[in-house]
Image (cartoon, rainbow, N blue to C red):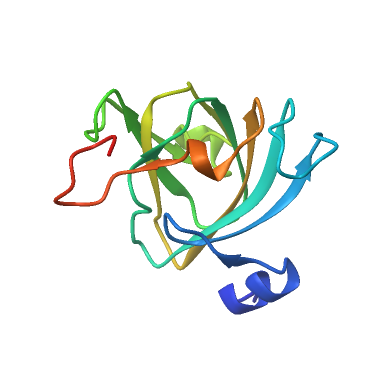
Length: 141
């Protein structure tokens, strides 16, 4: 049985500001500080806790890889307009891929010990475009 610690170590993941762990795996920009046309990360969330509500100014494609199914919520505000379960059980309505349109607030949580994804952002992700919603602080600030 693979443990969350095994996955974090094997994939060389580091803590992510919105919660969970990540590692950037691709950016087609010649200079890593440039945006580029697309970028990709591994992202792992654990122990049934939601990542922070966040949004970016680019479309984000999520791909579920391993671990427990996960719930992704997104909407115009930090309230879920839509909720999807990502995972391997297609017969029960789970999906292995999901597209979150740019500027939509989103968050994810694992339904079990951990869930592993890849995320592709196009155009490429820059941390300065990440908008985190912190409780008690107005969204977008």
